[in-house]
Length: 487
Image (cartoon, rainbow, N blue to C red):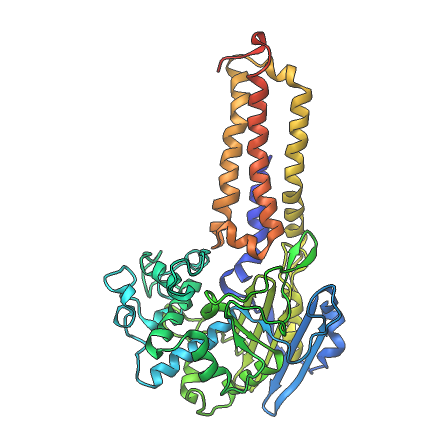
């Protein structure tokens, strides 16, 4: 029985995890143009009312075209989202980190083809020491998605969370060979964050603020710094069909280089215009163009901090952090762009933000969008997984009520029927807590940070399954001496 649910789980969370902890999502956009309609008038049609708060901004060659907001900073409050309300933008932050690296390249302080060991002492004589900066920027270093999603206890050594995480990565052999295959990994940008610190002599937040955010006029944006910022929107995680505000609102410095920029819709509109203005400013125009072009043969659809879709002429990046999801899409040739920010995370089949983000994006850019495929299978998977612990608990009650029959089992067939469920539930527990999460590039602990309800359901299913099988054995081998069996 549990094996069926495990298979369903794998198929059910694939559409969610692949776009949210590894590549992001751009939707089924055909590239055909249609007249633009005011997004604000269509927010309910797109489903914005289902989320605590939404902010978006669109730009074109004339400047900022539209900024819109709806909802509240936190469920249960009446403080509205505003154009300057900061959201955690997740992996869109990688484009900011890439700009910082390119600034150092332009200043002659490093080269894209420098090996890590040339700048970071922790990588000297280590397996990853020969990886180049270009390979990190383009996700062709060999580090896997899973390696980039491992959780760490930040700053237990006093070195600082970014330094500590990178020191651990330095001793870790990459899962693959560099420049052979593309694999999205937060590890790459974690290392780049430390590289920026070492080469510039400044902390990551200080460098990013002084050299990117302030020069870009992003005055309502900041870098995660392990503090609570009351002005920003509160993230909300999925919780069995609802959304629950995050209790710990500190923005972690340790993950800042790969996902820790906090920015408002209005500020991100300025950022999009800056990236497409064709001018030399925070970086040269030719550098911007290189960032939004294929980085290498091993990375044909990813540049330096940006995904590339040559078919519809867009460059884009999505972001998913616990309690927040976002999508930024640019059409550099036309000078158009849009960003969508949501202070809620998606559940498995329930409360997903993909349709909302892609609908707003398509409306702003004049692209056709066919919507998402049915979520029925994902919903069924979640409901089944959430129900499985109850099924096992009821099975334990049934076993107790039929304990006489269980104790009467004898012979090879009886012994097999007693012990085989323990073997299968132990195997299923490993599949649920280790194998299935690793298939999609995340440990169970990381999955639980994004989807606490699904993580809890998976863990509870694993534990109660083994408990049911063990309970049957306890019943069989306890009781009166005459009822005991020998295996």
